[in-house]
Length: 250
Image 1 (cartoon, rainbow, N blue to C red):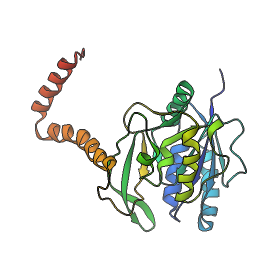
Image 2: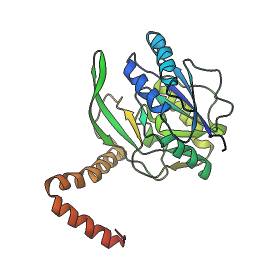
Image 3: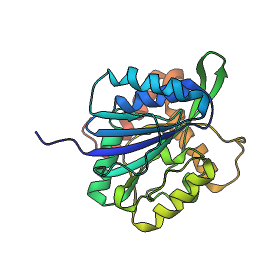
């Protein structure tokens, strides 16, 4: 059996909230079909917590190497890299699919995502208030993505075009992406949203065309669910008509 392809994930915390760090670490150690090197950069109050969390989660096994610090360079055997802000989580097959897309398209791969609005609860995990879908174009642009400060968590970058330094604050994430973006093609990973990004924007008003597209993407997802709850029979008939018009077998 051939060895799994390796991806380096750098996890950076922008707050002293331990639950965000642990949630992201757990999501990473449960990724499938890929070997991971995970480095972690956190504020001083969280360093002891992270060291203990890395030891605890390493017991789950799997091809994951956890480093409770920022290394000097990306893992030399990594095919691709990504940068997560603590609080980011992904479907278990997300990084494996992203790496496959990088290989097939020789491109920077971008996943569809949901933005998660949460409420902090002192001493306990945050309470999730809701999720909203983000519009993702077929060839995602940097201005489209960087409206979410944690946007790098949905991007997997081939190692050959990744800047050699590790971004920390939000403005460094934008500079890091601006250096990686022009170096080659960008592709969207097909499928439903696979990454949840923490909602870190201070405002939620509609300010751009992409914000309008976000609203429409959410409506396209929620409207059928609303109809299914209100009128299951009507929903079933409309769905059958839709598939017949498409020529689907089911």
